[in-house]
Image (cartoon, rainbow, N blue to C red; front, top):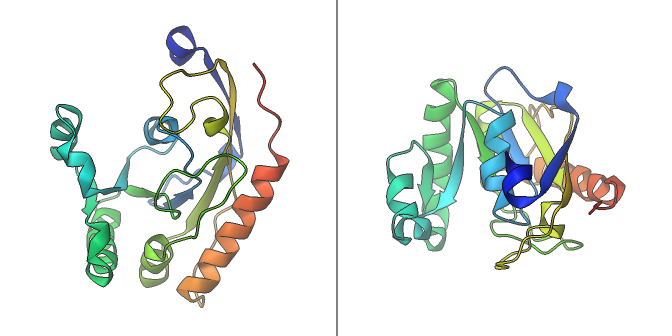
Length: 190
């Protein structure tokens, strides 16, 4: 269906790493595409989202009824603690959690600074972390109205057990995996 409407095809790598049990998916964030598509492969899953999205007419109102974790990014430590407390609750309800550790969309070829929320949640709960890399930003760039047809490659990495790690050690390991995977992904085919 996505191909018929937008001209996107998807190549999925590492499907065997998708967890049947609740997990924390730390994913590269390049476009709006992954905020829709990642839920296709990781059900049931919710996102940690910025509260500002609730202000978007119709779209934000529709999101309000979902069980997402809404954070005020300007709240600092309070936002981090909300990710942990709400995340523990959602994991306990059998939901996986998808977090974009860069916090915002970052253009292809670049990496943003990884925030502590996803790593802190994993370290506190012991939930496995599954890193996710993709090249959707090549076809669906940030703030671009025009989308390019082609094949998006999504790669799920092996689960990382956070036991015995600090937040920063876990973040560093996930960031390294995503960076290396981004370099290995095939070129976008149009």
